[in-house]
Length: 330
Image (cartoon, rainbow, N blue to C red; front, side, top):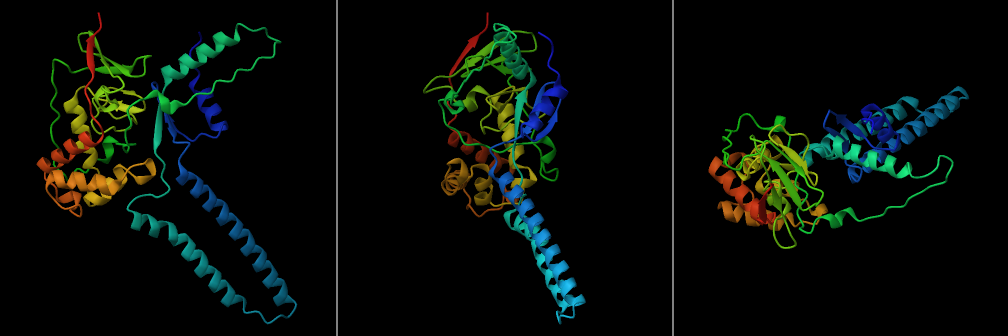
């Protein structure tokens, strides 16, 4: 099959309504199409245009009435309109300041180019079975949420550039016997294949009551994959790390980002496990704070390295980390 034309793929996605954030030789990065915040932002943009049009009509009407001798105070009206537009313009930044982040920001999702290539090749193979002038249509409806049997919270995105450089960084330690240089999800969705530096491979396999997604990916915090430099691949939309130690360090680094360091533990857990994803952030925060031995109102910036590690350990428990089966590939 001919290789995938990335430029055409990006253009088709954009024409289909997807917001393509970027692409490289391995991955496509899209804005989450199910993000409700984007709908609010689009509504706000349309509302702004409508308000501007109404204002223009009013100004035109006032101008005509003044020409005809009406005693309208145009300058007072202009002052009031300027005040209204000023309040509307300042509303967004003020809300974001109170919220502590960009309220209208949507998370990104990552798609492997190889997976797109596989789907395109399969589609071409299926279409090749039908005549050129033959009408053909296929319906394939499935529940993507049923692929994984273990529930987990939609942990936030982590970008290496977000790390707060003022906070002391810990060193990643790795079990060299199990450290891998790459990983990918097997066709059996509850299995991840790891490749070691010497070329040998092993599978981490999960089941209905074992092998949670966080264990499969060496990702105790269920951190979404967005092309992190310290991740060795992705599976199920989540980052895969070379070892459990590396995944734990990635979680600690996430907690050191500015998006968490400027919050209390209560606020941090509202961001990490929001109620909109079916979580109970208050309960989450209480369990984490109790395990660390501090109040839920303790600023994240005041936590020591040891306390951050304890916090990460409790998050690992909360995310349902359960070991499964490891099998060498012959």
